[in-house]
Image 1 (cartoon, rainbow, N blue to C red):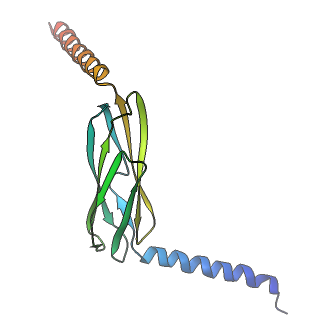
Image 2 (cartoon, one colour):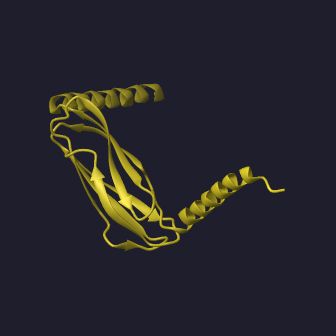
Length: 154
């Protein structure tokens, strides 16, 4: 006699396997670097970065939209179809005005014909005067380290 309770798990398993097979065959993009570190920038400076990606799927991919996290970030992206194995990019411009004294993690949501992806960046925005002091201090430390190395060589 056939147990009816077995039908539902079997149907769920078939649906799961079919959906996994479709994902593997469709388009999918993979970023070379999905989180970039912009380092320390002065308040008011702009940072430009290209997030390069490869279509690792079996079908052509197409970026439909790249949504920024806020109005301080302006993304543009490769238009048209990206063939399997081909490369494209999401070009990001970040304007730091008004973020002085903050450490930020921002992202761009990339909507494409495959799974949704994120391009993230980290940045520490400092006031211009503080950045100048930091750079001067780093130069002094480098010079003192060089002098210390020279003395040890004698």
